[in-house]
Image (cartoon, rainbow, N blue to C red; front, top):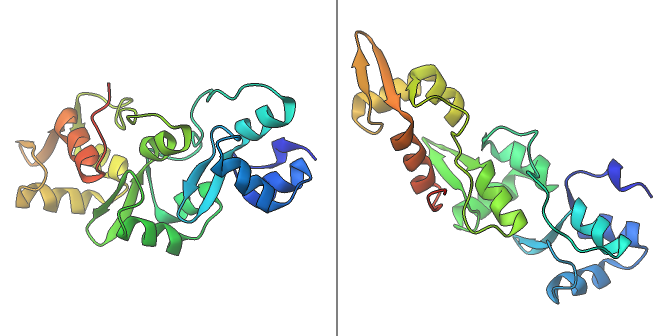
Length: 193
């Protein structure tokens, strides 16, 4: 069976199918550390596809780049569920329980930092800078796009003093560092670098 047909992260059942063993055997491999790269997702295990490839080919697994590069830096519960072969309800339940690194609430909705999810999946200690690609001074639209919300919500948060920024005539501008720190603090993540 071709591993390329699977996503970047595989379920226990998918790995069992490829390895031609039982799911119980794959769970044992994960629990005993014989499948490097495997990580807990709620009560189940998830395995990076590259880790399964390394195990099958008898090579050593080393994470070789971002797992979820096709997703935006701030992910919705639906996007996290798609990436993790899960359901948005499970993503929200893990976030509510404080078991989802990088999860934070923006208003009534959950958001998850992709870099924190990748740090969980690859065993890294700290997430990457979630705003690395943006300039040092951000517009309202850039902050809204980065936080996956509307410019109106950003403007209202700035008016209430929840987002620190400054005004240039009628437009708000925000320094990148405090916005990054806010995201990481809200997500419970450590500072990058």
